[in-house]
Image (cartoon, rainbow, N blue to C red):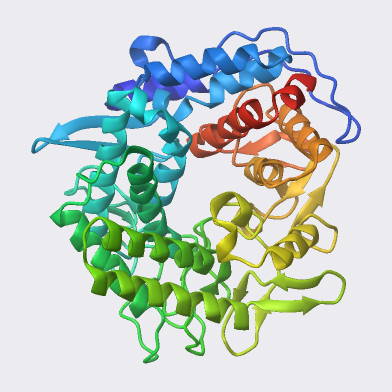
Length: 479
């Protein structure tokens, strides 16, 4: 597998001629001479789905812009082309999915990377088994360590972060406690079940993993003031170490769940991370439905439902505040004592991603709209404008760096056709001729970017274009 991935990385980074943009972010001229596919050769792709290939051909016909069609063809299948390790282990499918340029699997990223392919599984048995295999693999990961965020396929492999305190177990890449890691595993299982009606995934190991998940989330409410979790990084990048000997800042137990880290893998300032708590509200409600409708465990179903209700009530009480200019808005992080942080981090879950990620029944629509307006304004300290483009950034990659993922989510959550077109053109302007999304780019120079091979961002871009093809075909043709 190593040699194949090495080839794929080189192939995925192939470039075409490009003349950098000059002037404002609203200048959309460019000179790209060659739109030859940047996908790996067929024999070197890590997974091939006939249904995904059909979608690529179909959607490309609905795109007028040759450049945009080329970007979609490169990006949409990037997860399948470059990151999948599928096999059958003990007569069960097993799917390990790396995030791109890091040879480890995140629970969050792996779910998000395959999510746009879910509607195709009933017509592609091979793709269906990929999903079942990923659910099985995520179950193994949770049972290995419910506090870890990223894992290796080889459960005996030692991490390069072996100097972290405590030392991660073999098979664990990093042990950063992030609520959304467990929520994404629930999202994948529930989404697969709703799409297929297949209940075979809910086996004994899955049940153990979900009960461990709920117990871990309960523990991190820290109602008794204590947690077994701590994290200290001593070898390098000490900024990711949680303060106070790895335990994090003090909280007042109010029913919210603590998260030591954000979806960017940066440490939280205040442990009650609101986007992730909102995600937990829906995830626990989904678990409740599975245990009620499929597994027939009414007691545990009610446990999950009441837990979900408790967290939602606490969010509504402690995380929504009146803003001087925007009305009631969501804080990004709180501590239960009244301290709040009003920023966002353009990963998922994020405040702006709520409309994309969750059903409207689980969040305050007015507060969301006000929060979105605030985050996309100059009042947000991490909204950057420059010669190359503009959009949300965050602390993870530093000042003046913009996340394409944030621009994608802006389009995904927009009710304005003109805003959607503007976002797509921003993405077309800032891929630096590569035909792929990056983690970040500098606001004044899109050639200064981080992560050449970031499969999640690539696939999410493909998901956006597919969404426009299905819901706004004439708008897509207008670009």
